[in-house]
Figure 1 (cartoon, rainbow, N blue to C red):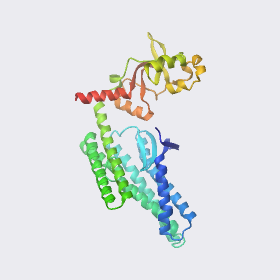
Figure 2 (figure 1 turned 45 degrees about the vertical axis):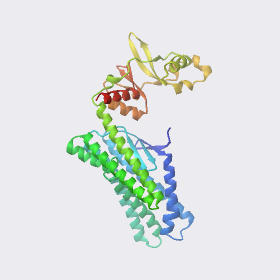
Figure 3 (figure 1 turned 180 degrees about the vertical axis):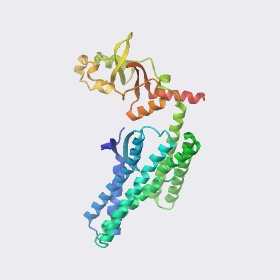
Figure 4 (figure 1 turned 135 degrees about the horizontal axis):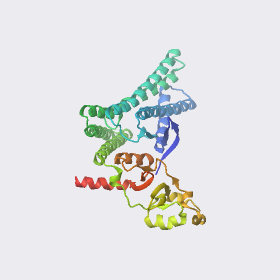
Length: 380
């Protein structure tokens, strides 16, 4: 189930806000408005401190967004597309469609985020200094505002530079090991182990804080450590997955016995004799004949079919509601399985058509890939 809200696009990258972001945004705004600014500036009005608290919270997340956009911009310059950027409870994440091909690219992408945070911190420090010099008394409030943003961006940059995969510092470490060993598997394994060790350290510190009476801070530290540990393990598993299926192409594992439907079939017939009978929720739509070869013209989904009113289904052909074929729906038989998996993730598709010279030659599903991996692991 999706929990994100699409808010727009920047440099052609969709920006999404996870619902958990609203929680942390509210907590930061409250802590600044009722804690930080009143302590730093006694006597400040309720309205002023809440305006500053909300503005600072928005600028913190704008800084996080710029951090992720910096990663994304460099990735795009190196022909790695970005599916989306999500702001969530821990900050932000750029969803790349594939891993870098070489350590230099990895290094450039990883460095871009912390570098952007340091530049933003420098800009906020100049703003704080400017207000301090111009009017040290009347602008103390504005100085504290920019000083806080300076500190938060320094923390963001330094935390991300910790050499614990998958933080930026861990990716920098992986790139350096990768360059020295020419072995991405080994580099990822070492970086992931360090990432897990750091995660367990955070959880240990969190447990100590809980026993010392700092319950909220301790639980938060344990939660962050748990998330980092899961991320490090997941990253290692993804690399092992690529090595397991490396060298294999789509034609090696695709399903060639295809259940397909012609575009002149009615929606009523489609539902009764295809969706209910074969229990598939997506069907390839073809034209032509068995003798000349079936040409792929699109796909029809259960969702699209059921959207047709019941009284119109008998007279509505599949061609009226199908999704026409385009590059997002199919693969070539010689496509590497790794690339196919990346495309499935990018398109959020469970199945893709396999097409050669416009002819439908197979279907590839995530279950096909998983079954192949399972068998290969058992054999090895």
